[in-house]
Image 1: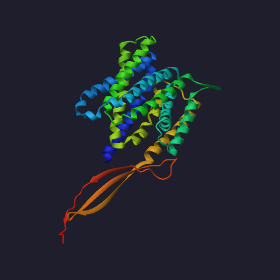
Image 2: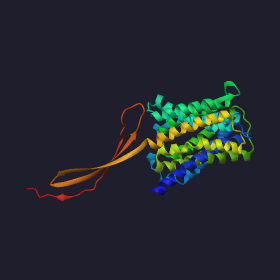
Image 3: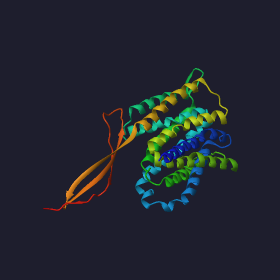
Image 4: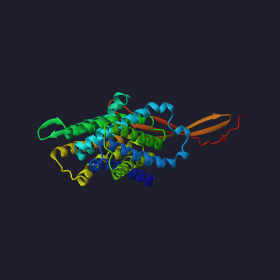
Length: 349
């Protein structure tokens, strides 16, 4: 059991590390590849790579695991938002600092939580509210031009727009998350890649050399495709909450790579933003790792009929969500009846 947990944790950290490659290496490729085409090639790489993996997996899937007609609205929303988000991200990386862009990616946590609250009426814990406030302060600090200027940098504005799009997209994808992940990632990659390609041609972006196209697709396969694959493998044993907590290290790995790969300099503004972002991320991890846990209780229920006593072992898990705005605990019971029949035959008088 320990080995499975260690392996799953490794997968979660690998997922974060693979995604962290996206921004610093995209910054390098953007010197040769236009922004919208870059977004297109990244998604094409993810869709083609995971699609190839899907060819070896699709026969193992049940029909009900695949996307159906009722999933169409959320699938369309997912694709449209995933076309817009990476275009905004690439524009932001091109204009601004890739270290700032990496950290600002954590604003997606804020966007996802607030959209879930306002649109889908989900509750937010006190710790997550604290994280939202700290991450928002960090995002504001990282978004100022500096040198006494009170204007937001245009690069940061594009990054924040990308985070909001991904926040909406997360809530759309969540509605179909029980379906085939291979299918979702393949559709997302190929459709978003095609959508961005059409937009790039409409705005007249010049096509780059073939070697840069291949490099961008390879980056997309690793940073988007393999990252999602590792994330899913981690979720099997860790669950969604713990996996997302480990995944939140991605912006910090990306920011570190920005200084190594792109030779960016540390600034006082960046360091202040980094401190608030670290504090916010700690509260996110505390909210998911500490306050999302399960207690499993076992009860013996004995009843008699037809002169036979039947003893049932009933196991049910209590998920405790400690919510800042509600009192007590929310209990979600998953009923597993483990029927260990003990037959004691009594002679009827």
